[in-house]
Every structure is written in structure tokens, then in C-alpha cells.
Amino acid sequence: MATLGFIGLGAMGSRMARRLLAAGHPLVGYNRTAAKAEPLVAAGMKLAASPRQVAEAADVVFSMVSNTEALEAIAHGSDGVLVGLRPGTTWVEMSTVSPTATRRLAEAAAARGATVIDAPVSGSAITVEQGQLSFMVGGDPAALERVRPYLLAIGPTITHVGPLGLAATMKIATNLGIAVQMLAFSEAVLLAEKAGIARERAVETLLKSVVASPMLKYRGPFVLEMPAEALFSVPMMQKDLELALELGHQLGVPLPTTALTQSMLTAARALGLGERDFAVVFDVLARLSGLSGSRRP
Image 1 (cartoon, rainbow, N blue to C red):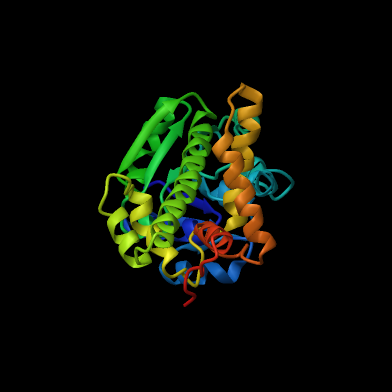
Image 2: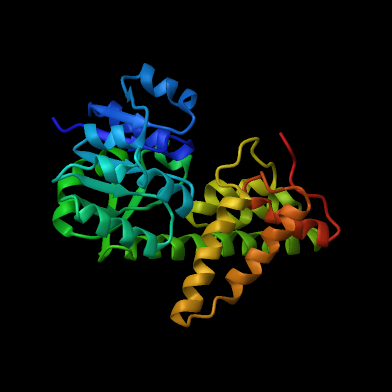
């Protein structure tokens, strides 16, 4: 049985790794803060001391880190993934990062006889736990087929979108839609409330209407009560929107609602709300409307 490696065991990565363990796959993992990986070690994962050790031990390497800089940090250097990759290894890069950075890593991995595919995800920690995560994949179709069983152990939906780097692009496009959608939902709730409809009733009505996407069904209620722990924080969403705006500039695609949403999230940070879930954009609009924000747990 193939040995799998997993680098980046945060809120999303740890839950993905747990699903791989539950499916019976041998797993070796690395996390910058080793203590956070202790529950996975107790569940059967072997803990490595560096990304290089993961690559040296694994037939398939998964990575899920916070941004492009974090990806380059685990990839390069004497303890990086690239040094440890063996010929025939497949590296499944799942982070939301610059497509250009993904392509550069693929070139370096190919020089060692390894293959990189990008496979970012659509969903949240809740979606992972429910077994409903979806993957968008870019790169060699044959490499995707080699790792398909492992991806299916994490989530049931896999869409191959084209050559390497296009999955990262698709993920960026997806996340700008999520952010803009949350801002529009907030506007709808506040307009209804200011007209005299109870906030709870406005949320209930909208989430029973045609606007109720899967994302809004679990994040929409945050305008009533914000979770104690962010599913996806303001800075994390701003990182993705910045990637979108950069791509829009490069490709000649105007992204006006993305730019506005980015500004509203900057306002959230200015108000001291940066560590909240990005749904806290509702609180920014509520204050501008003369209304109270969401409840705190």
C-alpha cells in the first residue's frame, strides 16, 4: 500500500489527513507547529521533522498551506520537499496560491522525476467533516488518476479543469464569488431589517430562496451569531481576493465587485474584526447602516 505524506495540518489539512487515516492509508505528516499534530499522531499518523522527511517517505505528497510564501518555504531549502522528492512521486498541491508559483514548483519537481498537480478545494472545515469537499484539479490527467482514490477518501467531487495552474486559477475565481456573495447577502439582510423585517426572519427567508447557495446555507446564519473560531478569516480571504485582482489586471478582466469587497474587508480589519470569519463584512455594513452587528458567542 502506498505511503501518503501530508504537509500543513491546520484547520483544513488536519481534517483531510484524518479522513485519509480513517480510510486506512499509511500517513506521514509535518506541521510547522508539531503540537497541533498530536491528535493525528494518536490516530496513527507518523510525524516527520521536516517537509523533506515527508517527501522522502511518501509515494504521494499532499500540501495544504496558507499562502504562496508558505508554499515556497516548505518547498525550498535543505529541509524542503523538493530535495526529498523521489522519481515517480506525485505532489498534490492543494493550497490557494499563485498559479505562477505552482508552475515553477512543477518545473523543479520534474527535474527530480516527480509530478506536481494542483488540486485546491471548494469547501470548509465543516464540509470536510461532512465528506462533501470538492476538488478542482489541474495538470497531467494520468497523475490525477494515480491519486484519485486518495482524493475520493477526502471528498466525493473531482473536476479536472485543464493544465497545471488552472485549478489554482479556478479556486481564486471561486473564492472571489464567495466573498462577493457574502457581501450581497449582507446587503439584502440589512435592507430588509432597516425596512422593518426582523433580522432572523430575513435570514430565514433568504436561505429558503433561490439565492441560498451551499456556502450561504452554512455561513448565512453567521450574520445572526458569529462563530467563536473563524472558518475562513478576513486576512485569508483578503489574500485570495488580492490574487484575484492581480490575475484580473494581468488578464484584462475588470473585477469591480471584488475590489469593493476587498475594501469592505479592509474596513473590517480597521474596526478590529480581522480575526473573525470574513462573514464579519456584515458587521461593517451594519455599523454604516446604524444597526448592531452579529452576536458574539
